[in-house]
Image 1 (tube, helix red, strand yellow):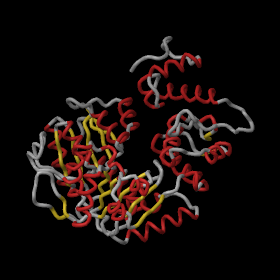
Image 2 (tube, one colour):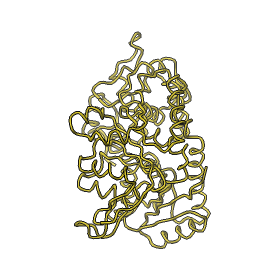
Image 3 (cartoon, one colour):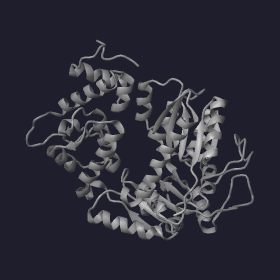
Image 4 (tube, helix red, strand yellow):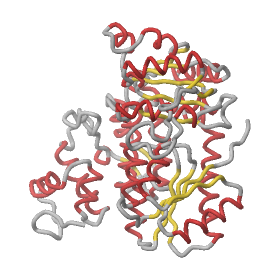
Length: 454
């Protein structure tokens, strides 16, 4: 399997820091791009073609932590992120790690510190890439064995793949696995969330544009197809593409040529296309929302990912995997599940599927202050927060849901040192709701009004 040179992006408004890091990392053998403009850096990062981003905390117009949150929590880009700051405080480091940073560098730092942080981060990535692929698809049920075998066979071809399944079932992980096991593994894997693309800019995002092609096009830009050349392009939520873009996409697939906006000369590309959707595309075809000819082009090989509730025998294995992962990441005391906790995890319907299970385990690792994970440590949110699952043995009735929520809020407040903004963000509620719950549950804080601000 060919090794691809790692790409690094530096976003820092201090020219001396930016240039120094670029020289050091370029000499080490990495391909490095840099910018001092936060908005430009965000746009570069959104292409998801970098393996690592060095991100300064203090930037004009957009704070580094806001960029970090957008990239990791909201858009889920694959790049690892190292935060750079001259304000190296432990709370800031904790916040950066919580938002998805992999490491933390405090100015001033030497060349050795930089190389060490970058190498450690990318070595972990390489280990994951080697191990990944099928091993990251956790589960030993007959269904999972069959899915892995299907992926292994598909990966050796260059045919278009359509992955279907509910939100959170791991469609992008399956797409990445296909890429990593293919002959294109040494090239870029470019994921695109079609639901997040602005409609009037979708054509430019996918196919690129020439300078002056439209208002605001101050420079020529490659689209996702050009960036993915010789690699794999993953179009998630393909059903969100408009009919006019569907027609152009069909032509690109047929001709392997990309019509850059503002240019009359199409560009040749060699891209393997993998698409995904949580909708029933055949129904979309019948209602006229999706082109039938495009449907058959993208679904040469269809893969359906079952929801977690349909392969329950894998739940415990997946939960154990993430317990080990997040225990190490957060330095958690949690070591094992009680038998009642395992029964609860198995009984829950997991409307958010593996994504929800993963988030549930990370949440309890952050908040647990003992080795055995019990029923009171588990709080389910799911995609419908009004329908929480029982977190106690339904036959014993030892603890009411309100008691569990009170304890969960108390642990979160303590973990974030009673900072209301951080606690409310972590719990997924607004600050007003948190204050109300604190008063209703009689939770004691330093602030008699229900907790202080950051």
